[in-house]
Image 1 (cartoon, rainbow, N blue to C red):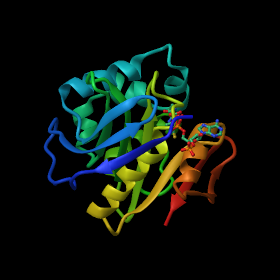
Image 2 (image 1 turned 120 degrees about the vertical axis):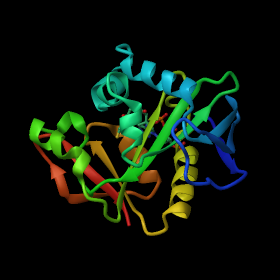
Image 3 (image 1 turned 135 degrees about the vertical axis):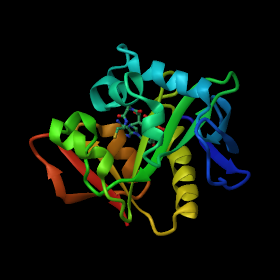
Length: 207
Ligand SMILES: CC(C)(COP(=O)(O)OP(=O)(O)OC[C@H]1O[C@@H](n2cnc3c(N)ncnc32)[C@H](O)[C@@H]1OP(=O)(O)O)[C@@H](O)C(=O)NCCC(=O)NCCS
């Protein structure tokens, strides 16, 4: 496993208009070199996100996430309008290596693939409270390379700097070992009252 560390150069400045990006730091990996850590996705990064989300060869993305619908066939603009704040790791050729995003979302609210039609209709009407969701993805060839713990930790620190009142939660499939290990390394623990045995899903929280 590679060793990697993040250096932050500046704080995020809000508001961040749609498709604006700010370079806020860098991640150095012994094996893989230097990545830019940016907040906000420009149109070139969104195009890559869409392509990754539609990639049928990436079974981890297709089976463990709603990204095909969220970013592949769905509208990035609509998603962004739900007060989502995306961070990205970008390699020296401009390739999107990984993303992390946050946004207000009631604790335990499942993603699209788990919702009924009626629940989906309510999705845009959700009330904001202190709970904010944390979501992360890494993309091949950068998945499983030890980049995510330092990357996600730096993003969490920055998000909490912007929203000191926020309580963070991650929704995971209980079969998704990598995601659970990553969340645990970041200090998240299972919230047992959210466990859905039928859907094999649980919320992990860091209060
Ligand atoms: C979940 C996901 C983001 C994890 O990213 P990753 O690139 O595998 O993460 P890393 O290689 O940086 O590993 C993170 C840490 O977890 C550990 N880890 C990862 N998978 C592990 C496993 N199966 N068993 C034990 N430890 C594991 C790593 O050793 C690393 O530990 P370290 O930081 O102490 O070195 C990535 O697998 C992914 O995007 N999957 C597809 C989409 C997805 O499932 N997203 C999450 C939905 S909730």
